[in-house]
Length: 264
Length: 300
Image 1 (cartoon, rainbow over the protein chains, first blue to last red):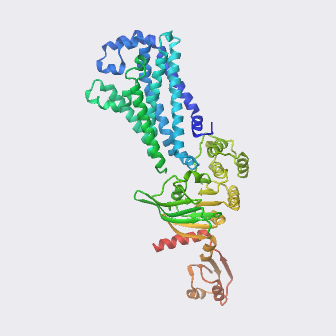
Image 2 (image 1 turned 90 degrees about the horizontal axis):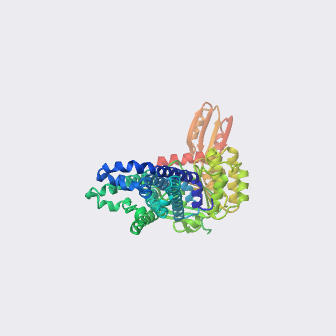
Image 3 (image 1 turned 135 degrees about the vertical axis):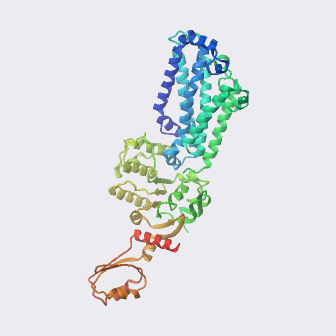
């Protein structure tokens, strides 16, 4: 594991990766096994909720199937936790190491900045992938078995939805990583990425009921996440393209500046 | 003429309106131990950080092994060993894992040599770095700088935290490095360390090199410390005729001063008086350093 920066980064994060994966798994498992309870009670209560809030809470009919329930309660809610993981990793891998000055020790070795930047980023991709796919997809499947809903579950669509969750998480993680690479300041990277996540989530959520936000919604990564629902309609190639392109662009901007700037 | 290992040409680094270093030019020949001296904030670390490409010069050029270090930094760093006083390492790794990791990144890891260095420095490599004392942490960092037998060692306050016995072993290793024909560049404010190790020194003050000399040249121009014990009250008035006399202090029957003139002239003068005792000492580097900076301050 200590042969490359990528391997060493994974080795260092092995315990936290397992903890995050198990935490996601436990959360999702708990949500899914509660499906029968929600199906009977909570779904009906939503009939009285104003239209504007249904964007947040979903429709009553969504709670009547395991697929609809997972879409709202797992894919729609777990993203907040996965974004926290992504932003923590994005801020710690370069900016965090620069703040603790271990990056300096690495940079005086005969290794290019490009290699450091790419290998650490790859490690971030792998960790978020393992935690999200393992924790969320694993949790859904494991939760559906004891309540007898596995045969009603669209397994392939669940995996695709978990994949989109990973892609959105990676976009925000990349934003944090890039700002960290540009500024060298973990706090700034975390605040900017966190604020952007909060602001754009609110924009996307309220855009359907506030026309003034409709155009702004296009700069929100959430606009390209699960709209339309991946579990109901499958992956949207347009959404994947936009999120991937934005992530790649951020990645390249960060790399370009990180290669040139002074490391104090 | 032999190509210098380090060549700085009109090197300048500014931080916005603030000065880092200003128009530094310096040549460090191959096979010497070179001391880079200056008070805190003079620009020593700025210079070293530019040598290892952590920061980029505002203007000027750095050549190491004859190559431009902005263009060939990666290649150059293969032959450099770097150590700073507070070199952060990965706390979660053991000393051995840390060194193995750096070795793997370099593409070679000589286990036998690492073990030999660890033994010489009395360094336990099996403990996690976060559990190590400052001195033992510094030993691991020192091994990381030495383990690939670099042609150039860049040491920024290297012995900070090391006990005297390990410092002595460190000095021995640096001399062996020199004996192998390699070069060492030490930045320090521990002047006794520089005096013991170095062949040449450069003094930096407020980002500018104010002197670059060999230790022999420094010693020649440096004042001797003279201490005379005498009851003769008239002697002090005779000193007024002496050239190169400075900093006279009188404590009871002892007269102390710095003297840069001919020793012969002084002895002839003293021979005419009744002297109980006389001590003549060469200046140490600290005295020279203080004089340099005092004079320079005075000049400014």
